[in-house]
Length: 151
Image (tube, rainbow, N blue to C red; front, side):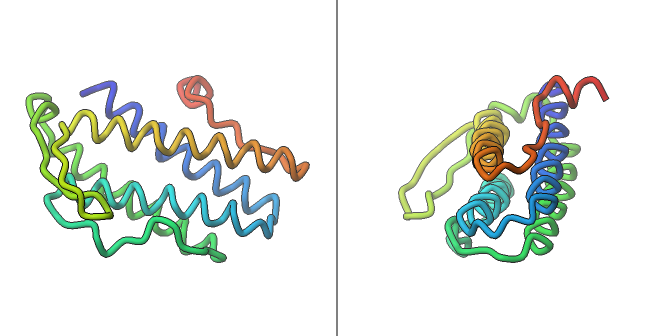
């Protein structure tokens, strides 16, 4: 449980860092804004599933222009994940969750694997965003885990 809590704390930190980099770059790249919104919504989708709620109301790939609204979504996600994880016992990590994908396909996945998906999915897309920022000659965010661990 300690590792998952630490990795989730890294996720919250990295989400904030990538938003800061996007704000500082003053990018108008709609694809980057859409991608960072996708990360925030995907975190919310998985949290809804962990909480036993549906996720069909969320659209993973919508246009976005307002980083402030996306930052608010990330902050709300972090708060809700913290509450969820604080109430989670080590023994619950292997419990299976039944849910449907966004297209309605049923799946069954462990809590541990869902939390791992949330952690890895965000890191993957933050890497894509950083690459795009470099291409635009903007400063990418330092989001490596080791940077977080050294704080």
